[in-house]
Structures are given as C-alpha cells and as structure tokens.
Image 1 (spheres, rainbow, N blue to C red):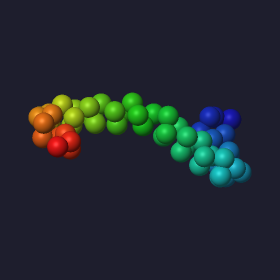
Image 2 (cartoon, one colour):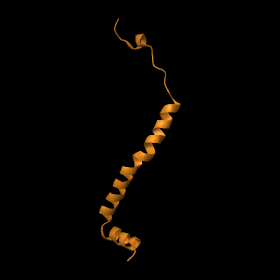
Image 3 (spheres, helix red, strand yellow):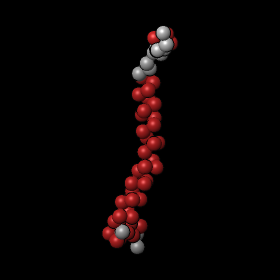
Image 4 (tube, rainbow, N blue to C red):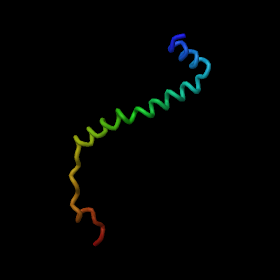
Length: 59
C-alpha cells in the first residue's frame, strides 16, 4: 500500500488528529520563513534614536 493511500486513510479515519498535525507542522516551519522577512523589513526602516534630553520627563 503506497504512502499516499495510508495518509488518505489516516485523514479520513482521524481528521482532528490530521488537522492538528498539519497546524503543528506549519507552526514549526513558519519561523524559518517569517523571521528573515521581518529582519529585511527592520533593516529597511531604521528609525533614528531620539535625543535623550527630548525623552527625559524630569524638569
């Protein structure tokens, strides 16, 4: 019995477990793709640091 047939039978017999495994797999591999994208956005919009005297609230 080929692997795809076993997988189809598993999805039909245990849909909740199969969906949970799919969501878990996406959750494991998503940071590998999202983190580099976020880092590239961070590098493109560097915000200058404010002057410390402008930030301080003491009089």
